[in-house]
Image (cartoon, rainbow, N blue to C red; front, side, top):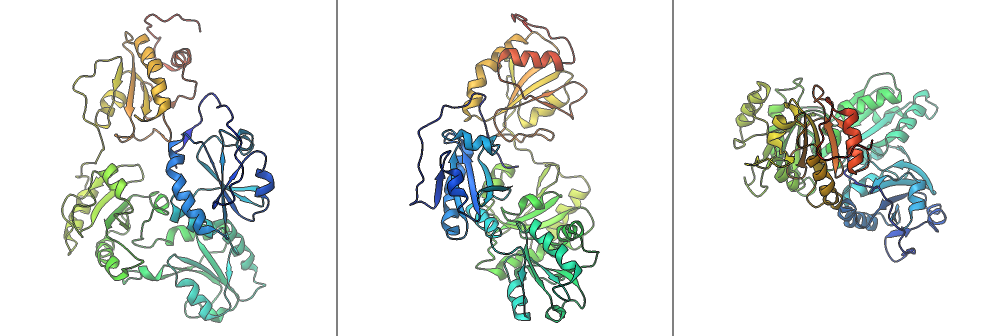
Length: 491
């Protein structure tokens, strides 16, 4: 999920009205003009934001760049929810930034794509034009599939084919993710198939000797069966992972080789290391691990922040990591050898369970005797999971203003329960430590309660952040009666 800034408990006062800025590529809309202006655009991507939101500030320049590139095709707009709360409330905005796709002023769908300029551009371009492109000749087919992205082409015997409508329905539902086209003359696709079917063409730049470049759909055509076919074949043996498709790849255990990959300017050089990864990957098919390659510059922050790897190190040699669908991370420490033997050894150790997981963690504090216990990733199991005590833990960011505001209340709560031997009040810096499995932290602060005997099913705290509300929650959820210090029980 994309991180958002959570709405504060008390709504902010409305700020001064902002008029439409026609000289910018991103329209500024408000309560007075949203409906009027939005209905004038076939397709519009609207960003609902708050000026104080850190995630919104990070998105802003990417949004502006995408708007400039999409000018004339898709209109991008923004609404300041601190100034125009009626509009934001009408569309159910509960966190910032929220992005929605509108068609002629109607809320059509949430925007679930990437938050980069390239990602927004590619995602929204697929929102324009027909759901499926009609190809009339073999030349049209060749031009369509000669693309940077994979292509799904329906092959039908005529425009009255009973399967064509189902294919077009599927294209309408899946166009945000994939490119669709169709032919109504079997001879156009006779080189690939001799009867009605669906063909999945992998990008020509990823052609290799280890797999076919075209996959043929053989099941009965329904939206569900076609979706399943695309899911199982779209990526092939070793796809190119990008910021746009990484979430779809990471639903499985995934090995990734990061290097100076550049398919726009150096296809041959990019495939040099990919072919070596694929040679090894072909020996491990069916073992539950997927393989991919990626540009290390695109994932520089992730490599440094999530794996402790400096992208300037290692020269041209790839970095190799494994990230499981449960979030476990492993790093290949041995230098990547051109014969692939180092990668084979890494995989053998992985499948044999001999690798130590990589965990990003601050050092364990030498002293930790304060009322609020400091938890880091390395000490999480000891203090939270393996503890015979109930634990209330706050995940925070050092720069979060809501977290700073919570400090005195949270400290008072810890002081109140300091003499209770059955409960621990704790906090963890979720920026500099890996958040453990079972804890969904998308905004700050996020607070969970891990009761004794139910550590694998922590309870998210959803109440307001006042002492009496924390106490009421703990009295209801705690495994033992609370032992209080200086608290006047008014509950």
